Image (cartoon, rainbow, N blue to C red; front, side):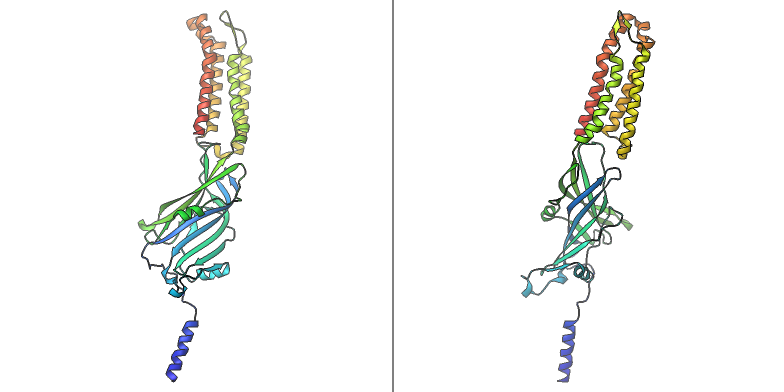
Length: 355
């Protein structure tokens, strides 16, 4: 009787004791452990083009299976255990959680909200809401047209791809979308794309990364009004310096210095506009983009106009080499050839940016 009572007491104590924490890899279904990832954009509050960063609040959802968390068959149809806040954090210390970090977060993240759902069949769903600033590639090749991608990178920090793999399915794609109230001034938010890639690690190992890319299309109207219109208008200045002269009996009627003054004024106007644009959009200073191409076209057109004024109007190089008649016809040719070449090039630059 005494032995029976001792055994019963030990059984009661064992049942009442808390479950032993097991944070090792759940290998019940073999390796690698499949973790499905999804990222929803709750809100996007700002986008800094010069720093190539944006501020946002995102929901990160991870799903996996851990057969060690299965409940008895009698509880198979029970609802999942739902844990939030401190309760979820305490549970995360007792079970295996994928060591996933946001690899492109800038600075400190805002306090995260965490939730867990543990299903009777061992499926686990972790949901974390994170706010902060994120770096993202910024492509100025089609500025201010085209689509910009606001990216969030989730990376497995500890486990290699042979231990843990990231994946997504249709349900994850449905979850990954901008929130109903997500707005970004001057931009129209589109769809979220997910992509999986591997990042090289130590000793030939690799770690999985899932990238969520939220498409954003800029409203180009303000940029066209403030930059493109002045740039195209400034192209007319050197053209006027050619058009304004006139020929009578093979002789030019306007003095060269008057037209050169127009060219110099146009040069200072382009330099001032270039400085202003680069002050506001520092990211455009280097690299190939439509704005730099149009500025280059302005400088080239000014140089051509100056060369026409100096060589043709001032020193009459063509007249001395071929005669008055050839000079007059050459000038008439330039009055339409230069504008056609310049305006066609400007249109091509804009069309390439729109492509």
